[in-house]
Image (cartoon, rainbow, N blue to C red; front, side, top):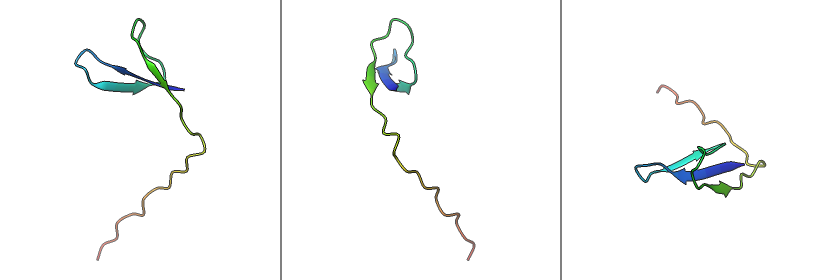
Length: 44
């Protein structure tokens, strides 16, 4: 499970566990997501 919360500056922060006392929203993570690395650039 991943959580999101706002830091003191108002920016969104994402992490596995929010700091104590911070209101955080759980985010569902799709474990079936397939990540494919980019093809390395080639020299012409």
